[in-house]
Image 1 (tube, one colour):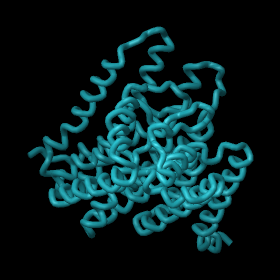
Image 2 (spheres, rainbow, N blue to C red; image 1 turned 120 degrees about the vertical axis):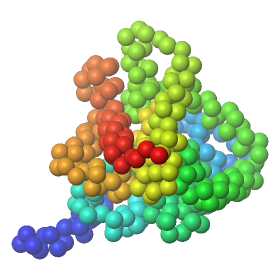
Image 3 (cartoon, rainbow, N blue to C red; image 1 turned 90 degrees about the vertical axis):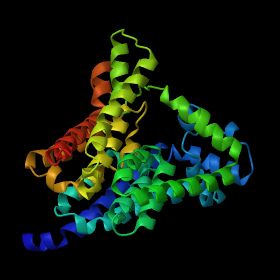
Image 4 (cartoon, helix red, strand yellow; image 1 turned 180 degrees about the vertical axis):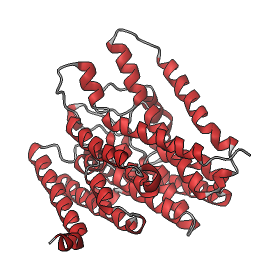
Length: 381
């Protein structure tokens, strides 16, 4: 009986996870929360198709009238969905997200030794679930980052194009260019070229006025927004908001300077051990260290920004989950992150605030582990 179960455990698990996601789909549609973020993308794509001024577009998302703050490339990428009615477009995008998620699982299938643990982590991934349910682009970001890392030593053109798309969807992966400069100079320049081409096409589609307005006005404005929302996973914002809870207010310029200083410190080993960065393992470790650290010090880091977390298990499964305790920690922490997400169980502002930072804690622990692994494998020049 048990041998029969083991034979079909992966298909059964996949079937169970599909059923679970469908259940969440139906529940979120019933509550009216499905695709709440997607409205901003839809408004942008519709505005492009109708030749409207993108600077005047405002969404009614959560009743806040928020300006769409995603990079202009996201509107270009989703342009075909603008031809459909909003609810139909939203449903198509949600289903496409699910399919892309399973495409990622397919891409990494041969790199996973303990598939049960990986699938459990993937199923209990708050970033994955939130991205699918609110209608964000985190799954597409995950697809492009996966393609980049698995093809970096096999196909320079595909790898550079994937990274160019990833950077155009979300700004965070741009930090990969730093170790990439030392790892593969040719790939670095090719990626820069493709980023310029992708952005030029984007500017042509959305118009130069909005394109520069986004990068010179909208994007910089987010750097000054250290949000105190419950589910903001940024540790820097968490520290700032905690200080304010106790009546200590510090100027925003201090946090900006602190972020820059900390990023320089975390980047220092890349320059000190630049010969080691030419090794694939060291390059991948440094890439993830920089992305994780940037997520922690960003002013705003929503859970859907962190879909790439599941790739850590793919590329560092032996080092990261070699001990049973850490594997159990990951599974249980992911479950708790979902349990506490945007909830106020304690009736205490400080406790509820940090209970919602469990995903940020996972990021922090991953970062410390990767730093330890990196230092263990580092040989001074």
